Structure formats: structure tokens, C-alpha cells
Length: 353
Image (tube, rainbow, N blue to C red):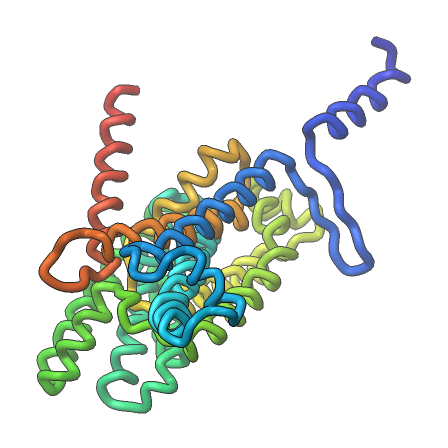
């Protein structure tokens, strides 16, 4: 092939399966077909899991569920679907997407597959802030308490891992230490609370969607959408940091500013999830890795991770409400069990290699 023919071949590979550039006045994105297809399929699967949750016990037939969703069903079906089940399903999808996106950002920021908000202590910090509001303040400010607690934890972990520039094993160890300390603080707060408050707070700390209400759904969706839109333009700069700060700086990327901005977005996503459903474990850890294996992509993989998180939490909640237990099972119990199985699988896979 001559030198004049090579550029044409490169363009052909791009048309057949490579990245597609999408540009506008203020935004430039490179869209890869396979991750986009994986994101769409995972989103459809998550929506299908939510639809199964709406008709799980057969009390409301699928036709009446559709009628209730479009305002044409009976009053009883509308109450069951719109007031009892739909808020739980919608909140589960939003919380799962927030956890998956936060995990993807944290893992790319720390360059470590263990860099998820529940491992490095950010969820524990958000839970501490929200718990202080739940036990001693106005419940309307739970989201603000979670955001403040998560941000304060991020600052403390960053100071402890300062030599690591917010990446590597030093960050993970600092996060585990701070998270363990905050777990003790949370336990102390529960011992000092009234019995009824302590019981409800303990259920919330496990991670539960059982108390989901309609007024919680809109703020969670707005927070998720706003933070994802804010993250999309900066993801490309975050991926360039893999080349090193000096090389990325040569391409016009401010490494310090990018890390701080990504950290704020990731803490915000964690706060959205924790304030809505408590510190649900392992979704933020597993979702980015599973999405990356399916999409075979490099970099952050923000949208596939968000879609995978929504699917994992929605499926876990469907399992939680379908198991024949004596009472309602918090979804955090199911995600913890699935996370343990996932880690055991990783260990076995690593041993075989």
C-alpha cells in the first residue's frame, strides 16, 4: 500500500467499526459503536427488570399495569403501581446508575479496580453526614448532609494519600482506614439515638429501597442527569491522564483541575445514591468492571458503567422482594452477597491465570 492510500484505509476502518466523532459548537465526543450498543442493551435489560418488578406477584396483571402507567387503569391498580411500586423501581434504577457512574469515575481517577466509593470510604462518609441529619436534624436536608459528609471524607483521604496524587495503593489504604473509622462513628451514633430512630437508621445503613416514595424520585433523577451531563465533557480529559501529567499537559489538560472536578462529580453521584437508599455496597465496585468486559473498551466507560449499575441494582432488588423471607429483605443484603461471589470469582480467575 502506498503512502497516499494509507489515510484512506484509516478512514475506512473508522467508518466500519472505529470511533465516530460527534462535534458541536461547545462539545466534541468520540462515540465507539460497541460501548454504545452495550449501553443500550443494558438499559433495555434494566428497564425490563423494572417492568418485571411492577408485575412480580400477579396481583396486578400486565395489562392493568400498562393502563395505570398511562392513566387508564382502575384506582386500585393505579395506587399499587404508581404509589407503591413505581417509585421503588425508578429510584432503584437511578441509584444504581449513580453508583455505577461514581465507581467508573473513582476507578479511573485512582487507576485501581478497587477504587470504588464503598471501598475507599466515601460512601461511609456520606452515610455519616446523612445519619447526623436523620438523627439530629431535618430529614429534608439528608442529601445535603450526604454530600457534605462525602466531600469531607474525600478531602481527608486526599490529605492522607497526598504523595500518591490521588491514585494508587496509597489512596486505597487511606480510604479503607478512613472508612473503618467512619463505620465506628456511625455505630456510635446509632447507640446514642432513640430506639425507633436507631432501628430505621440501621435498616437505611444496610441499603434499602423499601421506603421509596414519589417525592424522592424527581430529585434523584435530576441530580443523576445533571452530574452525568457535567461528567461527559471531562471524561476525555480524565482518560488522557493515563499518559501521565506531563504528556496530558502538553495536550492542554490541567491535571490538578481535572482531578478535582472529577472528584466533585463522583462525590456528588455517591451522595445522590446514599441520600436516596443508603450506602449500598459493591454495585459501584462491580458495575464498571463488568461493563468494561462487555464493551471491551478502554478509559472510563461512564455510560456503560451507569447502565450496568442500574441493571445490577434493579435485578438485586427484584431478587430481594421475591425471596420467601419472613419480612422484606433490604437490597443491600443481596448486593453484598453478589459482591462476595464476584470477588471470589475474581480470585479464582486470577489463580487460574
